[in-house]
Length: 238
Image 1 (cartoon, rainbow, N blue to C red):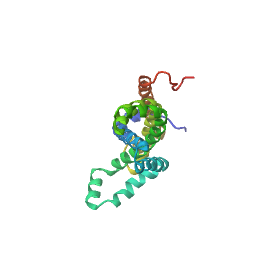
Image 2 (image 1 turned 180 degrees about the vertical axis):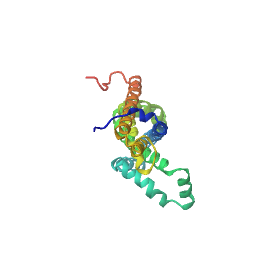
Image 3 (image 1 turned 90 degrees about the vertical axis):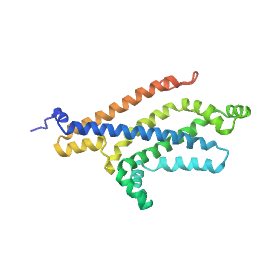
Image 4 (image 1 turned 45 degrees about the vertical axis):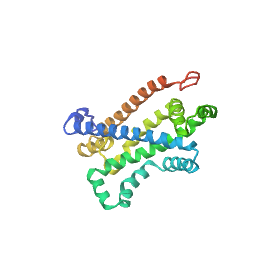
């Protein structure tokens, strides 16, 4: 006898609450990691053209190291190894507040910030040396030039790349189940093990990530249109 699909099982308790809780945690982890990663990535990326050589090297090393180490490896390091390197007085509170969640946010933040750093470093080449020289000639300091002139233009140039990284954060959050974070993927597998309704459980997980990806893509496409620079080609244009 073949497998009979019963979608109604997903609305039974406690499965319905599990799906809702997992979705909430997925969005929470992803948004926090994205916001923090974006801020850190922009800052570290700007250091690549700092007048101080050590800061330039720091920016390059940060991007190369963290974006080239697999996300799952970084997650395991953050969860299993990092607490052991900390004093016991700090380690205990970490586990008490839920280091599973913290390690997932930390890992996604670092990985995303490294990817954003690379995009910022590439985007700086498009800003142009002449613009920087003109800004400095007005008496602005290096930091004032970056904050008031370079960054606003730079962000408009790299919006498509930031959209890709935003999607990567949501998809990468599924790896958090490996350390026990009860996000969407964890909850769908939990439903499968308890109810043996694997088709329904994995389908709802797939649909959730598709809807999240489409929602992010639509929102970021609006941002991209608003931030577009007249005269430059954008995605979908020839």
